[in-house]
Amino acid sequence: MPGGSVEILLNALLALLFILVVRSQNRVRAYFLRILLLEPVLVAGGGHKDTIKPRRLKGAGLRLRLSENRLHLPPTHGAMRTPLSLFSYLLILASTVSAQSAQLDFAPEQPYELAGAQPRDAEVRDFDRDGDLDIAVCAQADFEISVLLNDGNGNFSHDEPFHTGVRSWGMGSGDLNGDGWFDLVVTDGENQATAVEVYLGDPNNPGKFLQAPTIHAGRFPIDALMDDFNGDGLQDLAVCNNVLYGLTIFLGNGDGTFGPPYHEPSLAGFSSNRIAKGDFNEDGIVDLVLGGFSSIRLALGAGDGTFPTLASPSGSGRSVAVADFNMDGHLDVAGIYIYTGDGFLSLGDGQGGFLGSIPFDAGDWGLDLAAEDFNLDGIPDLAVAADNFHQVQVFLGRGDGNLEPLQAFSTGPEPQVLAAGDWDGDGWIDLAAPYRNYGQTAYISVLLNQSPVEPWQLLGHALNGAGGQPLLRGSGVASAGGTLLLDLENGAAGVPAGTVVGLQSNYSPLYGGILVPAPDYIFQGLNTDNAGQLTHGLNLPPNTPANMELFFQIWMLDNAGVQGYAASNGLMVTTW
Image (cartoon, rainbow, N blue to C red; front, top):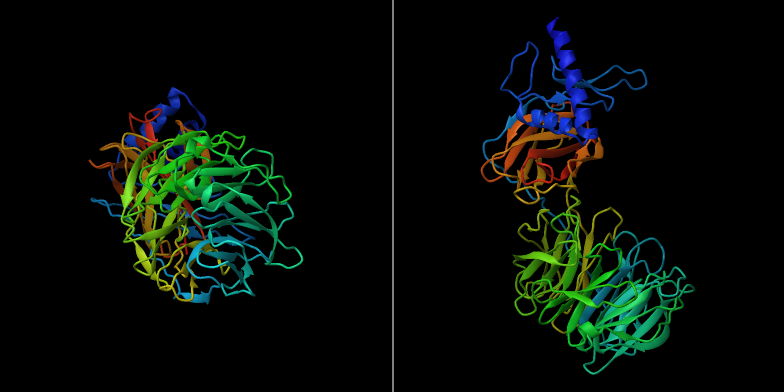
C-alpha cells in the first residue's frame, strides 16, 4: 500500500478512536485515551518519530495534509482555499515560563464635587433609565445624597442633591415597587439610631426620588442590600447593624413598603458593618456575608427570609466582596482586616463552608473592595480603596485564588469607597472612588479603564487531580508570526499529558470532567515536571488571520482524578 494511503488510513483510525474517547464511557475509551497520551505520533512508513506533530482528529470544516502540516480553509464564495499553517512547529520549553500579567491602564482621575462631606457608601444603577450607569453617594457628615448622572461617555453631572433626614453611613438599591425605576434606602449613622429611610425613584423626574415611609432596623444600621429572600418575586431588604442585632430583614410588599422587621437571632450579638450576597451552598437561595470588626459571618438563607445557619470565613471585615477567585465554580469571599488593612481570600467549598484562606498585602488602611474583571480575561480581579496612599490598588486574579502584585492608580486624598461599572460603554469596567479630601469639600474620582485588550479568557471546567485544580494560562503574541505559551500549574508530578486544541468549543462530558475544545488536534508526548508544571509553546505563522478563536485544554493521566484523569480549565484566545 502506498505510503500516502497508509497515512490517510492511520488518520482515519485516529479520528475514529477519538470519537470513541469523547462519546463513550467504557474501558475501550479509557484505553484509547491512554494510547493518545502515552504513545508518540505514528507517522507514515510505520515508524515512530520523536518530533511531536499535531494530529488532526475531527472536522470543523478544515482538513490537514500531514505532508505539509497545513490546515486548509474551505472555499468561501468560490474563492480558492488558502493554506493556514496554524501550528507550523511545536516548541517544548525545558522550564516553566510564568504567564505575563496584563498591565492595566486607567486614565488620570477626573474629580466631580459631591454635596456632602465624608462620603461613606455608593450605589451604581441606571437611575434615570437612559441606558447609562449612574452613581449615588451618601455622606456621613451631612443630610444629603449626591446622584451623579452619566452621559454615556463617562462624564457625570448632577442637579441639586436631595436632602435626607439622616446622616447616612450606607445605602442599598433595587426596584422595591416594581415600576422599573431604581429606588434607594439610606441608613442612619448615629450611634443610637435605628432609622432606614426609603426613597422611590420618580418616573416623572428621572434621577430624582420620592420619600416613602421610614422603617427601623437594629441599632446603628450601616449597610443594606436588596434581593428576594423568600422566593415570592418581590424585593426584600437586608440591613446590617453595628450595635444591636447584626442583621435585620424586611420582607417587601411590592409597593415600596415592608412587613415588620425580623432580627436574625443567630446574629443578635454580632457587630456588622458591611454586607454582600451570593449563593454559597448552591441551593438557589440567596445567602448573606456580613463583615464585622471581630470576624466575618456567612449567613445561609433558608428561603423564607431567615438566615439561621452560620459559617465563618477567615478574618475580620472592614469590607467584603464576593466572586469565584479560584475558578472552581464555588463563590469565595475577599475581605480586609479592620485594624491592619491586610487582605485575604477565603475559598468557598460550594457547601456553605470554606477550605482555607489566602492572604494578600492590601497596603496600609484599605477601606473598601470591588471584585470585577478589569482586564477582561475571564478571571475576577480585586480593587482596593487605599486611604493612606490616596490610590485605588488593583490586584489581577490568577485564577487559582492568588493575586498578581498590585497596580496603583491615583485618586484624590483619602478615598473611602469604591464603585465599579462601565461608565463610557466600551465594555471595560471603570472605577469611581469618593474621597474625603482631608475634611474639606468631598469629591469623587472617576477613573476610566483604558487598558490594552487582553485576548485570553479562562473558561473553567478543570478536573481536579493530585495537585488540586490544574490551572492553564496563556500568554504571548496571538497574532501573525507570534508565539503562544500555554502554562500549566497544579498538575500531578511527572505524568503524561496532551494538549487538546480546537477551532471552536465543545463542552462534552469526559471522565467526570468537561472537554472544552472541539478536538481538532491533540499534541502528544508532553509530560509534567516534578512540580506538576509544563509549558507548551506554539508558533503562529505569518498568515494567521485576526479575530479567530482558538480553544485549548490539557488532559493528564492522574490516579487521583475521578476516573484516572485530570484536566486543566479551558482556555480561549482571540487572535488580533
